[in-house]
Length: 98
Image 1 (cartoon, rainbow, N blue to C red):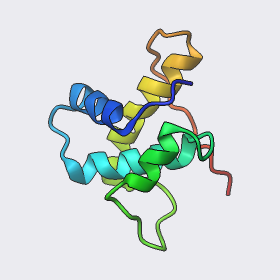
Image 2 (cartoon, rainbow, N blue to C red):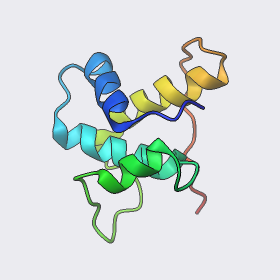
Image 3 (tube, rainbow, N blue to C red):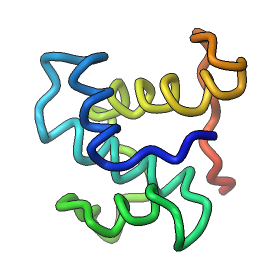
């Protein structure tokens, strides 16, 4: 999977969801980075810890109002990578197992 920077994710969300604001983009970026980072040396890990968004202690997944932005990031960086660069319309389950 491509390891996007915070700036790349913001640009992707601006393209995919032009009406999205920081109340939906910031949680989406945080939770996408949380779910898909590959370790401390990755751009996603850096985006996770540079995020101005900090979830509450009771929050364990992307909030409902930011799910569309989160799904746009999954589509852009995970599903496209899995399909060899071609966009797909399939929802990928979260990597969290509870």
